[in-house]
Length: 306
Image (cartoon, rainbow, N blue to C red):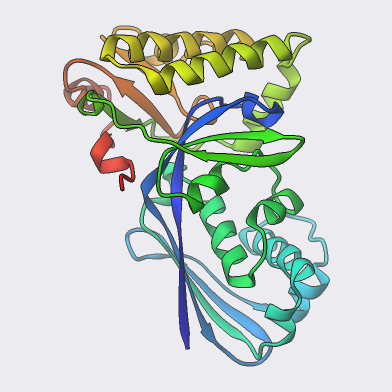
C-alpha cells in the first residue's frame, strides 16, 4: 500500500520577524512544494530516501523504530538527527503510527531546489503530521519552533493572513489578485539564509517599542493587500522594508546590493538570503541576469492560484 501526502511551499510577503510576536503576516503559498510517499516496510525501521527537484538523492538512511522512540541526543546535529527529532515528537503525539507498524519505506520529493528556501522543512513537517495524523502546529512547536506561517501555507491553497493570538495560530484565507501581478517577480539571491540565525538577530534587536512596531506592521500589511494600483503597492512595500530596516538595524537589500535598480525590492522571510520580491514597471530579468542572478520567476510561475 502506497500513500502520498503533499504540502505547499511558502513566501512571507509582510510581517517577517514581527509575526513571532503576534503581528499580522501576509503570506503566499507557492506552486512548488514537497511530496511524502509512505509504503509498508519491515524490520521495525524506516528506509528513507529524499530526492531534490532534479531527481537526485540528497539524503538517504535507515532509521530504526527504537531510534525514533528513544531519541538519544546526538553530539552533532545532522539531517538524520533532525529527522529523528521530528519523528520522535510525532510519536509522542500519536504512538500508534510507529507501535502498530512493521516498518516503512518513505520517499520525499521536492518540486523546487532545496536551497531556494521555499520550505523544505515546513513541507516535510506538515507531511509527517498528516501521515501521523497529528496537529502540524503542535509538532512545529515541539520540534523546530517558529511562528507557523509556513505550516499555514503548506495547508492552504490561497493567500493568507496569519497571526499568533496567545501563541495560537489564526489563519485567514484571503483573495489577492491585483491587476499588476505581471509587474511582480521573484529573484533568488544565490544563497540560503538560516532562519534560526535571523530570528536570533531580531530578538537581540527587539526594543520597548514592540507594540508600536506591531501596530505599524499591521497597517502596512493591510495596505499591501488592499493596494489598487502598482504605485500604491510599491510605496507600501517600500515603507514596510524601511520599517523593518529600522527595527533590525540592517540596510535593506536594495541599499546593500541593488541601489541602482529602478523599482522596489522587498526581502521575504529571513533578510539577506533566499528570494526577494521585485516590483517594477519594466521586466527586471535583464537587470538581475547582468548582476549574476539568473533565477527569476514571474508571479504566475511562483504563486499558487486557485
